[in-house]
Image (cartoon, one colour):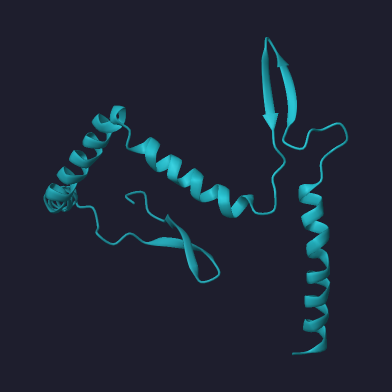
Length: 134
């Protein structure tokens, strides 16, 4: 390991306790549990300062809550509509494509659409058409 890389690791490891203390420190006058904000009309909001490990414990709980919310009983009509429309699109996809091509042939629309490619590195971001029919 080179000296520069070793020096960077030592600096990074030296900063870990400082960051951990900054995450767990509370402002003057705060309770340890949460900071209270009175927003009027009897409503109080509580804000708990994030701790160092909250990312590892909070994200899975949030994802699980989102999954439970997505499959609630009141959402089943929407889910059934999504599944049904997806099944119909899969079943009729080839027919839709064939009819679209047949229509393009009838109005003499070329299948090749020249375009200018806008790239970011080696990835094509967008293709801008160079003809009106595109």
